Image (cartoon, rainbow, N blue to C red; front, side, top):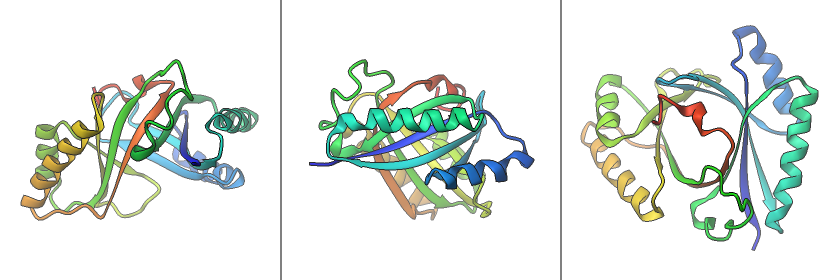
Length: 196
């Protein structure tokens, strides 16, 4: 069975005038540009790529990552983080691809349009969930909520169910959601003050 990997490589904070060149760089390497803006934290802006690989042999992802790292270096984009995720249902299949298991956890992202930010912030605080947005998207009301869990797939599903109930009681609804398992995170400290 083929494995799907989503690779995120994050670079340094960008000023406004540097963003178009970063977008062009991402397009040139067939990757999706994302500029995450966290609601709080030490590194509030995280410019990154998202690139999906479908690998027959899971070990092939190592070569793909190395190639991306070299492209970043050649374009003078310093790398602050490499993060590799698989769909939650593939978590067991991905075991052993990164034997050092640096930074493994379960993660969920839900996308929604927010009409009352203060209410959603209160719910996120209560449910230990975290707000962010993609700065490249112009809809100021479109946000993401993230839940990260270090225990189990069951635990994260339960937490998401509780969050969804709370969100729906204030007439907000997720337009899109995604459960993932992070099999490698080279610098989880980048989220300090946001997740932790």
